[in-house]
Amino acid sequence: MSNDKQENTEVRAAAFALFGDLAAFGSGTSKEQFLDQIHTNFVSFLLHLNDHENQVRQVQNCLICLVTAALLMLRLLLSLLVFNACHMKGRDSKR
Image (cartoon, rainbow, N blue to C red; front, top):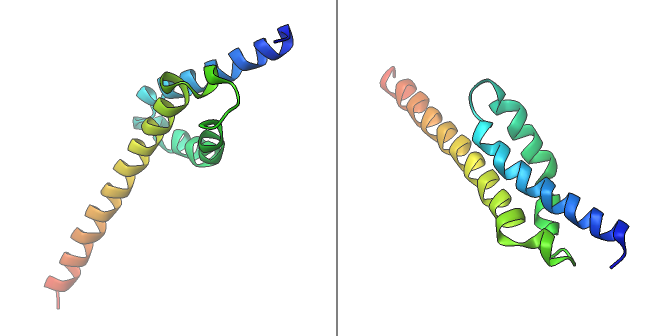
């Protein structure tokens, strides 16, 4: 493997690891911006699960990043479902 190709592989692998690590800070005031980044990059995460370089698709890099992103999106979805259910119940009781 050429030196440039090895560096590119290492950068891609590090980028996934970093994005997964950043998820710990993807709440509070930065949650909306972090979720925007997840939505923007989700297809890329999925595609890199089949990356030709094993170092990029390793569990601790790409898959952990995907799981972390999915959990954040699931929490958001559950919050919206609960909010909507409470809102609908409040409307029904006023009738």
